[in-house]
Image (cartoon, rainbow, N blue to C red):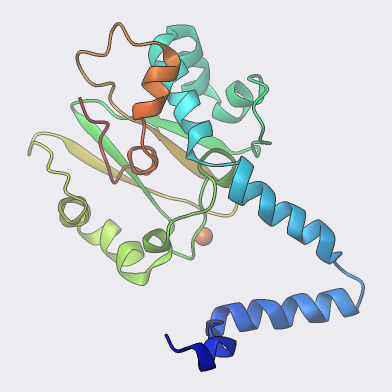
Length: 198
Ligand code: FE
């Protein structure tokens, strides 16, 4: 990147977002300061560490795990985390027999409340189309190889329904605290494109 063309670093999408924000601001529909606060909130406060705490708690506390799988929105709302979970968050549990993977085939719906901003690959056309047709191939691209006997279930997110994967708890972690467990839970493991390492 040369110094003299730093003015053109905005991508086409960023330019479109800026144009839209300018129009909405001029017409008085949005307050730029409020928008900045929302963006800052998702960039700095809400992130995969929230989902990781939820997963660690579910691993450690069977009653919480049952509540989470029954109604994730309700279970997480009761934790007093620094996030506001929407009404339709569904937690799906991975087991040695069943692996869940999340996608949004239509656009990029994602459980922002528990995972923060979605990674670029999640929004990419290849991920969105291939995950449905060839989930095992997509998993291989992420370095995940499952036994042939493990069934893979693909969940298609929508604007109304978001999913969070409850990964398999690795063996040998029985003595870890919830904080230590949470530190091992990766974002990808909660989307289903990764496993939690032993
Ligand atoms: Fe979407």
